[in-house]
Length: 302
Image (tube, rainbow, N blue to C red):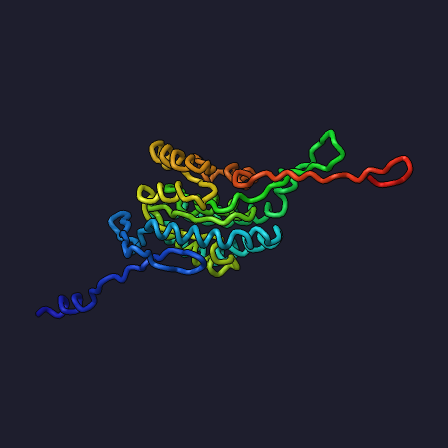
């Protein structure tokens, strides 16, 4: 046997593909269905990625619901600190995110831009955490002897479908405004580009984000859209560029329990795509009446 052929055969080895697990309640479980898929880009297999099932959706929603009340009770300043911490951790792993985006078919320059803008977007919404109430709340004029206040409150649990075309920046651009106001969320990662979503989950796990505040699933929107659209404990849905047929089905299923649905068709790399109105999209207005103490001519209160 030729020595060169012998050496080359000895050096050949099977590639060990990374298994990208999901992120639910601060942990990294495999799907209960034991199914997975292998996304292929430019002839290269990216890894083993979990195919989430209906039960995985339920588990993620339960985790989000359990975490929502305590997350909403945190001060706006503390939520801002945590969002800023996510940006810090993402900055420290920026090269890994760039490499993964390139593996997923994104050009190097575009990948660098997407990672930089994702960091900036997190900082942007961190700054809005303790300011959006001042913009959208109001003291309302009324004809009776009352103070009348309108303030924003989080809707609860938001199911988010990440952009297929912008797997990292599109995800960050929806998750950040959703959690800034005190909502919790479940995210379905881009099917074609799931690597950066799960790596982002690793960032979340080390960024002071309480378990259950952000939960990330991987899988196929065609299999899962009915499950989250009809789930009675999901309060709102945020989607991006799913196509007319899927958008219609999601709206139809969500209407069964009057669930709020926001469908975006935006270029998330444009600066104008980041604004406080995305925070407002997933808040409800609470109006409070408070009586004003009246003083009579004799000095008695009534």
